[in-house]
Image (cartoon, rainbow over all chains, first blue to last red; front, side, top):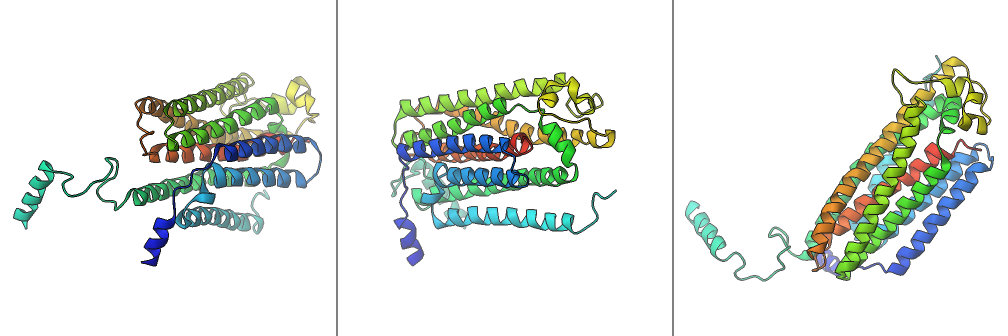
Length: 105
Length: 252
């Protein structure tokens, strides 16, 4: 019952063009930033910074362009589960590769 | 049982909407338009998660091979053009913006605005593929496509290759140079699968432009435009990761 009441409370939110414009600018700035950062020699930090910027950009796209910030809890949970499962699988794969003599021949 | 079923059937045929009023786009197995929209949105996200896993596998392979054959991957990535890749990133991010605006137009029931946004998205998508064609053809010319005709020249004699020379590459030992082919295999697999998603998206966009002109999405039923938007933004996100990983991180 309370679930249903809650559900109907969740109204369809229309994101305004201003928000979309701001996200577009943020994404373009992020792109410029990541190109610039790639020319600076930071050693091991280079790929980490590139990935950090890419993750930030992807988060902006998911939250605003894909409306997850304004979506139902079900959608939010689904997205979170997907990211969590993906990271788990990568983590388990890498755990295998760093703990064996793969590639030593 | 069969009798009552038959009666129900015939009653259904004669008066399909007797006793209940609802929009024509609401399917009978849903209670409300909101429930239908939520269910469709959920299904779309589940599909996108399978896509995340699919591309995720490719990214994981790239991560592992890059660590194994690091010098080969660095030298091979110097063969990509950052100006072209950067320009493509701009095109794709802008197309995501026009798509988002398209969803807004559909929600606000602005038909001509929606058509304009969809056409712009289509053009930007085609522009992306055009630039990709230029990049691919250069790889074919230099025999950097993994195959029997793959050429190691750019990596064994970097001075003979403009891109390699500009990056200050040193001549590589033969066994490491051969691993540049692994880089290009992953490059073509990842950007190729991404481009295939773009092509499918552009096909659906073309279909949607005709439907939008007929007013299909501006009468209150925006689910199709919304879910296509999710797909298009997902393809954008894949490129947001492909661009730095393939083009940028070995550049300094």
